[in-house]
Amino acid sequence: MILADKEKDIELEQETAADEAAQEETSDEVSEASGEQTEEKPDENRDATEESGDSDDKKGFFKKKDKKDKKDLQIEELTDKYKRTMAEFDNFRKRTEKEKSVMYEIGARDIIEKILPVVDNFERGLMSIPDEDRESPVADGMDKIYKQLTKMLEDAGVKEIEAQGAEFDPAFHNAVMHVEDDSLGENVVAEVLQKGYIYRDTVVRHSMVKVAN
Image (tube, rainbow, N blue to C red):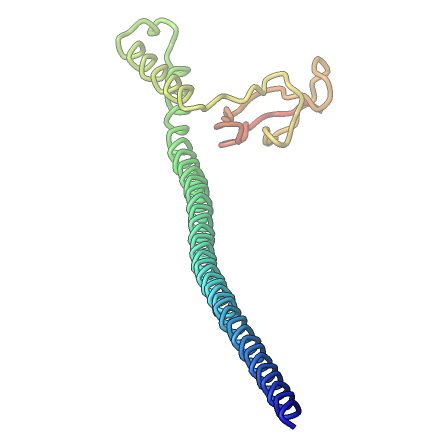
């Protein structure tokens, strides 16, 4: 009996020790699992922080890009306005210069047309002076004034139209008479009744001529 009781006590002690060992192993496993979860949480928080930082950086990057694009658009708009303004100014300048040139031509032609009759009168006056009076002071003065007028017209670009002996050209000549002259060819200017003049390749006054048939 005594031996049986001892054996039972030994078995109870062994079972108790096994239960305690099992409990210790279970507590160790629980602590290890909780430690692993604790260690993993900081990684998740760090990843979340990094992702939020990346998103903030992206937002900041896009914001800067938007501002830069807006400035570029403003620069392009101002550049376009500047180019348009310069083009309009250049067109205005060219148009003004052309108008000034046309007005100058009109004014010059008007003055030349008024001077030409004076030149005609000087020519008629010099032709009416007798040969014996050609050396007189009056004739000499008239001749000098006439030469001064013709020189002034030449310097201004006025040229006399060559008509005597030339073929009749309606662009330069104005035929007021026709004559029969076998010594001249047909449609040839036989005589100049009034001189014609050109101002810068434009006819100011046609030559008044007599044409041979």
